[in-house]
Length: 113
Length: 113
Image (cartoon, rainbow over all chains, first blue to last red; front, side, top):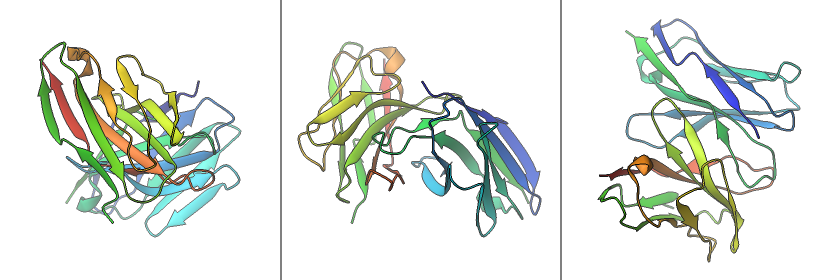
């Protein structure tokens, strides 16, 4: 089955710096790659996603890149702000597979003012 | 529009007791799923459903049962609780097909003593 590895497990940056979180997946059939942000005591919330027919996607300060050949994808946050502090999860899925998301282990991002 | 609603928010069980975690969504989503979240392990898929009357196992199904009698509800049953089932449980739903964005509930924190 699919396996998703996520690094680093913790990341501390200064406000205004960029943050990068990386994930690798094992199943070449996976074609949907979402990123979730989880704040303390809350459920995960989708922040950006990318499909396998696209190499890069941006939404304001966040971007995701996908390298299908190497089976890895990354989240980039620019101009980080204290409110970006949270746990971030990557996931992989196959369309029409019942919403089966296989998650990475999570990255705790801390943005210091 | 409440989204995905989970009850209860907190629960303490004794070993061997049974209980049902409730999940309801009002978005007319076809896909629903249950995840458990443990420290350092991300979210792991327990069971999922692609529609009323259809369920399937995820990564960690042992010790849990599900049923999907309506589109709106997807309860998770613990038949005989064990300390290893101490976790935070999340329910998620999505439209299905190519509309794969998953919406998560706020979670149920379960402690088995």
